[in-house]
Image (cartoon, rainbow, N blue to C red; front, side, top):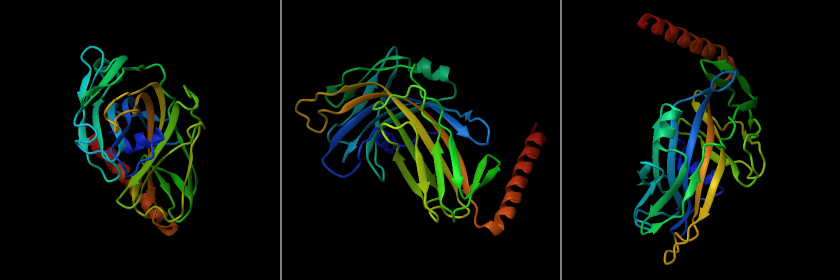
Length: 287
């Protein structure tokens, strides 16, 4: 699973993304551990683990207010960010995935990290592994069905409500954020942030927002800032005052499928069960 977009990171930090002068608001170095919620039981780890670096702000271009971005950390930890153009925002970013946490910590260990942004070198921020948040878990109410083959069935004709568990491990008001994202087959794309003070998030999906027959990924992320510095870049108004942040994040993905209508619920349920049986049968034949 690839890390969520820099837009979600920006929203989770409380950055209002929009048009305006070319301004860097946040420079982020982060570690993320991913989980999957695929049954009524406990969530399970989902590879890969992720290290990411982002430069996010308003109206960024490849040449304004910076022309290059890179970072260095302890031992051989280093990365060069690439400029990306997106529908919602432009940004500089770097990402690398690891199958095991030991591999991630080996390549990007705890310690001090500093960025070079154009002609400016930032203060260091300390990335530590001691303040990871607890694992987010979704609970669903409204037009909901049940679990079939690791997908939760919902009725798109009814309003849906999704609520997280409580962010209760390493939570600190003002230093923790809850971000969420729901994306699916072309039609519905949404994202947002939780309250910057509260430790729980509830989102409401109005009736008719999801398309019957489509499958969506519902993602939530608990994030904890472990260090923050302010960049002084005299002579570069677009960079001066940018916040340099080290973050630890724990994210959980839940897949939901919008059932076309109640009368076809049984048919889709049967088809999904059959697909699961056939998949198991194929695995056994291969084995």
